[in-house]
Length: 234
Length: 234
Image (cartoon, rainbow over all chains, first blue to last red; front, side, top):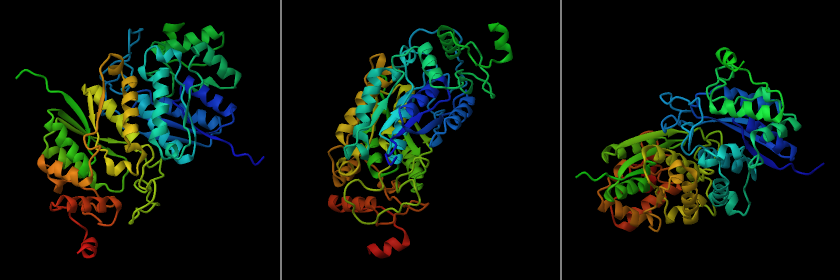
């Protein structure tokens, strides 16, 4: 009874992947400190989704960190002058946000150091790293190496672990895992251009991956679509 | 005449070190994009100093990126409930901001990717890395390794260089270098608890290092001190 529960920082975007990761971290016995980022993303409703997921999971603390990335620009997700593509792209997608995971993991590292967490969970996975450089296993390994040199905790010999439980899973496997852990995917928002109440467009890359994942898992998809989107998908 | 000038992102805090680094980068022929961070630091006048330095140096663009690090806390520089120490400390100082340079370099990496800069300049040096883990050469090397895995530019084979021209210099050598390049140190603010007009306390670690550096370089120190500080130093 007197055992101290280990702490983890969990990057919680409000999407399907990170909601699953949070469930995995809790199932592994971690007291979870969730962090969402307000980085000027056009899909603002994912921030509300993250709060709802954190509340439902009864995390130790949920925190929204604001970063002004609009000044960096260069992505369809933060620059309103670049459209979100509605068909598959070759190579690195325009929804790639320059250095995003490096920035998010760095801030998570700061939080981890202050709360005394030796584990940071992030939902990168096989679907992502086909396109985004900062989701690849080599990137995660390099960040872990950096983390252990970057902090006071590292100097004092505490190892910081970057946990990527979804790394080798496809979208259908992620959904199956989450369902087995009781994740309520109705709380999550995946769409890159969701409306203010979290209803999805059905056409962006992220919507298509999600819908396909539920179909392949043979599970019903609780996604709420925008009126126009419903017409086109029915 | 038609040669394209290479671009660099320069982390410009408003202090003595980064002002010197900017002068080095310009002397090496880079078109400089300077970045300052508004991270809730108590020494707010360094942001005004950074703007003044950037203006005097006629940089291509100066940008202030806001990050809400007060939610991270854990440092005398961002948490008003922790006092700035006025005598030398053993080990890692309480002015250490968790993961600060990791966060700053990550954001600089995003800027570099968008503006097309293959060089990021940061003013870490021997004085710093005696105390701060994220100023050590091994940390810088680990960040460079990460940077080349983290970005679209890296995937496309462009190498990102993390430039640390002050790495092996003492404060007096930095000041000598800057003076030889025409840096006006009257524009810089080093004090951790400078007042709104940039006048220094004379007592914090950073003030003492600066004052000692000018003395050892045999150069006159243009630092403006607060009235109470002047009494104690005269």
